[in-house]
Image: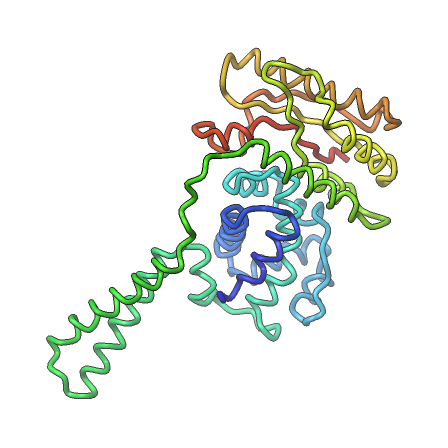
Length: 330
């Protein structure tokens, strides 16, 4: 098992995301860390300057404290989170919650025993570069080792390139066997809707008393409201979940304001898409208000096709872009 596989598995299971999305999110986060002045040390300084020094201390000390998603967004910046979310094909709120969930265990892995390294080790960097770069790095190390062995044992120097090629072939075979199976089955919308409903319902039911507004929208955004093509009529199969969502919203922290954002794919006229997304957001807001949510706690807004979270070139990507996305305004 890789150095950070447990971190990935935890996020995949907790947020019901794919291996690809979790891996992309982790890769983006590690890239962001390496780009800071001072690397990991500079990254942690950002949290300390934000008044979160006790959290950093707990991460380095072994008794890792969980951090609120809104704190992570404040430190990293919303634009950074949105970029990570887009690359991973996730909503911004889900990406924020997932990054917050990753951080404590990730920092413990990056700084074992509380010692902050000046640069991340190669096994960690492989989660950024991916298998191809890791293969190249491993091959270079193997070539170097083969050359040293040849010199020490007196083997003619011309043999070490041959040994390196053999090692390269073995490493390539190893990575080939570790690759994820190719998915040949067609994208199944109904199955995705079923899975989304199960995950969202479980996440909503798992909210503990005193949950934050970010925890709430993280659960809400796991659900998919599947409007009919060209329609803003709220589908009846969504009533049950939205009834539960309304109850959860009424128990949210006082003063919470949530935006109901409507989004579409890029099929059709952009202006018509913007109007349709606005009407769909209004439909969801109106239903929630009828279920008892304070009207002042909800704001509806349509974005049309201006904020895709996935490529519009595939059926799956368009499905993910057609969404209602909840976000915390305050």
